[in-house]
Image (cartoon, rainbow, N blue to C red; front, side):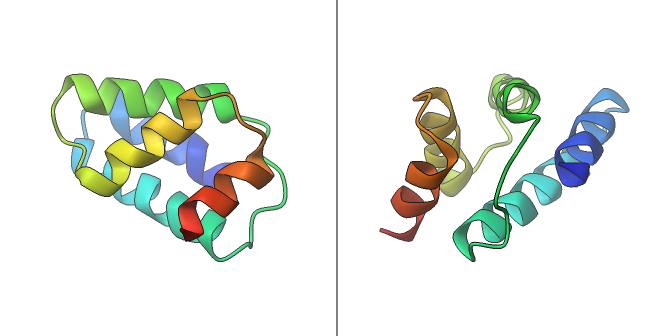
Length: 83
């Protein structure tokens, strides 16, 4: 959750590249199964949506956004990221 908050702060401060870096770190943590729970899923969705509007999301991050918007449980998102 701290990385989600840092991504949101970086986005608020107009540091889009830093925000997207935190998003990729979150993706790696999820993919590696390090994250067990995420309290700020809605905030992360908001960050991803704002980054999408700014047109700075790459293909992997766009897929991640789609997974986050699907309202699937975190466990299913982790599984989907592995495939």
